[in-house]
Image (tube, rainbow, N blue to C red; front, side):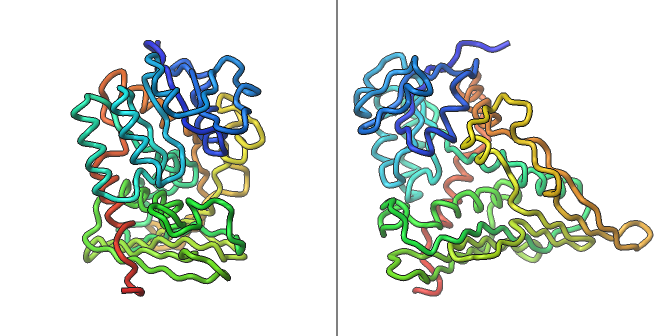
Length: 344
């Protein structure tokens, strides 16, 4: 039994809006997809005939019916638009990276509290099947005390992309903020705030203005060390996650299928949605009670970003604490905004 649906507006209908947001609020009894902003191409009504397509953010924010605004515009616009939306009386779900600096994040969290509005950050990769598989292995304690974890996001994109907010040296740009925000969030979610961190970055593509290789070290003291690496120049991708403990190792490919399924048009309500393909299981190698080495395959659970939107609903309607906490976001941004160690 659900309560009153949350009337929701979306600030952009590019790939983010079309793939990662609209499918989870349309045909969802918890939400009422009311409106979108489309400044040039008008495509949303082809998919959602009942919604309003506004020409500007201001028009959408002036609609008194809209309770929740999803801010999925370029990274350097998040702060300004979040302030406007909060002052218009809206709750917020803001795409990662939340804002470029921890200072701006503190201001937005404080403004939200002062206006009694929820400020939530969209860290959707917590609801990916490959990450959930890693989380399950850690919680099962099958590899003993953790010594190290490697998280990688590798792609081969030698060309300079057309999107300025990803390729130009402006606040919140680059792969550290784009993909690093996901990986650092996962580490903080699993293990808490690290004791020390280090950030390394290099520029390798011709004519690039930003780092295309970034690595973070998150140290949790005498025990666990976490290594986060993102690269745009990896031809042969390996494991996305490697866990090593005192009694075993777990390796997992990046295998979540939700993005590909959404691009193909599969709806989140489809029974096939979020099911990992056969053969993509993680590999668990451990020492059993007889001191024998055992190798086994570990299937990932079925996953869906719909879980994030359910949390958004309960945060607004029931005042439940949102699982992506203010402390976690501030820690993430403090790690992202630190200077590159090798460039100081």
